[in-house]
Length: 71
Figure 1 (cartoon, rainbow, N blue to C red):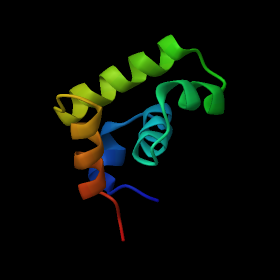
Figure 2: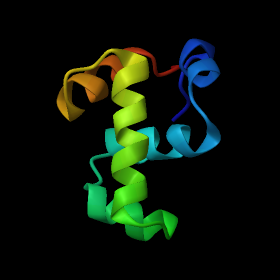
Figure 3: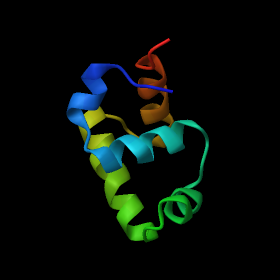
Figure 4: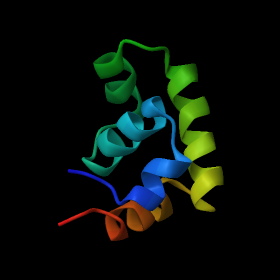
């Protein structure tokens, strides 16, 4: 799964990975374990992702990201 360049330009490498795992349905805890980071770090990354996407919540962010997947 690859996001359009528009999304990749907005996100750091960490935010891109967190976004991909989020869209794949991973929970915050699963993302933290997968990336070997604290839950707090993941929540901070998600807050930045929501802000950059102007998303209201996780579901809204997933919808926006889903619209920006290269096919």
